[in-house]
Image (tube, rainbow, N blue to C red; front, side, top):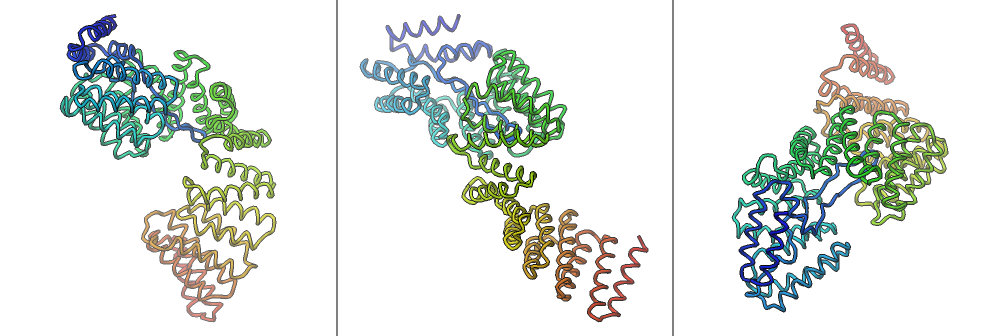
Length: 588
C-alpha cells in the first residue's frame, strides 16, 4: 500500500510539476531498497513488464539443469520514469511515452520484433534530446537487452546490458547494487552462450557487490549462488555446484515468493546427486521439487511434467523400468497438453519412454515410441540434428537386437549421413555408426563391405578403447580375406601405440598389449613370422613399461615368442624364451 501511494504521488507530480519528478523518482528508488525483500519485490511487480523467464534444456532420459534467468522486471520501470519537459518538449515526451507504451504491449503479446522497433524508436528520441536524465537511457538499454535475451540473441543482449552497465557505473560508482545487477544480467547471457569463463568472471563481480550492499540472506545473493552452481555443473565440478546450489536454496527458503526457484533448485540438486551416484538423495530432491510444483502451481502445471520426466530418468538409471515408463506417461500427458503434439520436449519424452520399453523387452511399444519421436523431430523447428541422430541410432540398435538387419542397416545409414553433415555430432557418432553398419553387413555376409566399415570405424574412434576392442574382435573373423585383416590390425595399433607406452593407465596398457598379441597372431596365421615377432616384442615392451612387468602376461608373451622362433628353426632361442616363461610362472 505504501509503495502504491508513492507511485500515485509520482504520477501526480509528473503531471503538474514535471521539474520535480527526477528527485522524487530517485527518492522512491532509494526507499524501495531499504524495505524488506518481500516489499521490494511486490513494489516492482506493480510496474511488471518482464516476467521471470525459465529456460529449459531437454536431453535424453535426464533433464539438464533448468536455468531461470535473472528477474527481468527488476529496475525496469513504467513509462512514467521518462524525463522532464524542461529537457524535452511536451510533444516529444508524449512521443516517447507513446512508443514506450507500444513496446510494453508488444512485449506482453510476445511480438518481439515489434517491441524492438518501438524501443529503438524510444532510444532514438532519448539520445536525440542530448541531455535527458541518465536513468531513462539505462532503462531503455536494459529493456532492449531483455528482448534480445528472450529472442535468444545473447550477443546483442550483452551489448545492450554493457551499455547499461557503463551508464550506472558512471553515475553511481563501481560498487553500487545497480552495477552488480547489470553485471548479473551480462553473466546470465554468457551462461546461455555457454561461455563459462566470462560467466564466472561477471558473476563473481556481481556477487562481490551484492555482498557489500545487501544482507547475507538477500535474494540477490541467492541468484548469484544459483548462477555459480550452474556454471560449476556445466564444468563437471559437481561438489562445488552442490555447495553453491545449497547456499542459494537456504536463502530462497526464507522468501515466500521464491517457490519457483526453490523447486528448480531441488530439481538441479537432484541432477548433481545423480552425477555423484547418490541416487537415493537424488530421489528425495526430485520428489521435493515435484511436491512444491504440485502444491503451488497445480498438478497439471508444465513444471510438474518436467519433474515426472526427471523422476522417470532416475528410475531408468536404477533399472526400475516399470516405474520409469509410468512417470514418462504422466509427463507426456502434461507436456502434450501444454505444448501440443509437435514439440521438442514431447519428442524427447517419447524417445525416453521408447528406451524404457526396449529395456523391458516390449519391443513393439518401444519401436512405436521411437517412430513417434522421429515424426516429431522431422517437423519441429528449429531442427535438432543431434536428437534426430539419437532416434536413428536407437532404431538401428533396436532392429539389430531383433535380428532385422535390413531395417537396422537402413536407419544406421541414415544416421551416418546425418552425422557427417551435422556440426553438433562427434567423430564418435560417425565411428559408432560405421561400426553398426559393419555389424549389419557382417550378419548379411557382406564380408568385404563389412570389413571396410570396421576399418573406417577404427580410423575415427580416437580414444574409445572399448569400441576399438569390439572392432578388432570383428576383424579377427576375416582371416580368409587375407591382407585386409592385417590392415585392420595395423590401423588399430597405429591409433593406440603412439605416445601411450608410458601411460600409467593400466586399462590402456592392457588394451595395447592385447592389440599387439592379436596382431601377432594374425601375422603368424599368414606366415609372416618376423612381423609377428615385432608385435610381440612391442607387447613385451608395453608390459614392462606400462604394467610394471606383469608376470603372467610376460610369461604368455615369452611362450608365444618361443613358439614362433621354433617355427623359424631357431630352436635354441625358442628354448630360452620357453625357460623364461616357465620361470615366471614358477615364481608366481
